Length: 159
Image: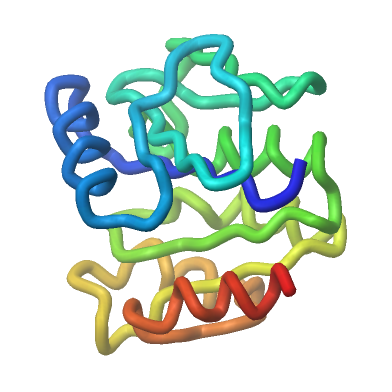
């Protein structure tokens, strides 16, 4: 599967559906809150629902679960990144944006080990620099870019 997008945001369940709707209204991609069994597809961005880890199976389908919190959160970016790389290997591009804590560091390590690429938001545009800083300080970021350049960097890597 190429050019499928999965997003993880540390938000409660009632907020992720509204966020997906808002992003859908302002994005060239179709954005929706993921449901168990959704298929990954080009041009669609699936947002992990609050309180559910989003994993990917070998059939390009979403599997949601309420497994243990990772880094104190559910959904956890690490969970999604780690399952994405098992399915897509070096074709995986991980993006870590503003946020508290270290979620995304373990997942980035897995993506890098498989030959994938990591983009981290720079400090200047991060509201909370914790997650990107953790990835950058671990030496895992291939590209450190301002928020407004993230989409163009993703497109560049895909092409």
